[in-house]
Structure formats: C-alpha cells, structure tokens
Image 1 (cartoon, rainbow, N blue to C red):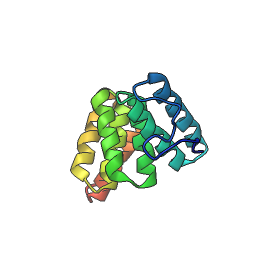
Image 2 (image 1 turned 180 degrees about the vertical axis):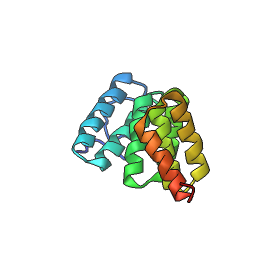
Image 3 (image 1 turned 90 degrees about the horizontal axis):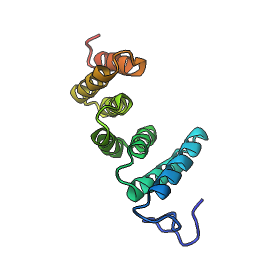
Length: 141
C-alpha cells in the first residue's frame, strides 16, 4: 500500500535515506510479502531498503531472488552481484547468482558462480542441483 506523500523515488516518505532502521524495516516487511507471494510488493520494498541502506547484504540478496522470480534477470544479476560483493562468503547468494546466469543462458558464468558456492558449502543441495541443470542445458550430462 502506497503511503500519502509517496513518490516512485520514495514510496515510503516516513523512512529517511541513510537510516539502518528504515532499510531493515522495509526488508522485513518485504519478507512478509514474500511469504504471501506478493512479489511486486517485495521488489518495491527491497529496492527502497537498498536505497536507504546500500550495504544491507540481506536486502540485496532477497531483492535478487524476487527479481529472478519476476523474470527481471538483469536487475537480479545486479542485486546479487552487490550481495556477493558485500558478503563474499555467502554460498546462498552465489547459488542465486548462478541461477540468474542459468536463466540468462550464461552457462559458463553459472558454472563459475556455482563452483564458488560449492567451494563455500560443498553439501548445499540447491547448488548441486543447479550445477546439474547447467550441465544438462549444455548437453553435457
């Protein structure tokens, strides 16, 4: 729901740029929307959360997941690149980045990012499954 005084630049006028509280509040509200499968609301809230708090890794990660789900692969790739830059040890973010590469038919990029994910957590089933999906898409399985 858009608040009174909202604009496309600032859909939440009561939350100010540079505040960690505002970014975290929006990110958690986005998580509730995610559970309710309201992807458009998730994306709006998380884009604003990242504007409020650009170094908030979790918001970048979940924004990338939501954008991937919505089919916006380029923006998803950008959000996930930011997530892995902020926290290079996050195997989940690397896996999601691999999923975006796969969706964009960038098989070499997918294999490289999934290798990074699996180097951080070799037993992660999602990364292993994505790795197999990439190999099947390449005709190598």
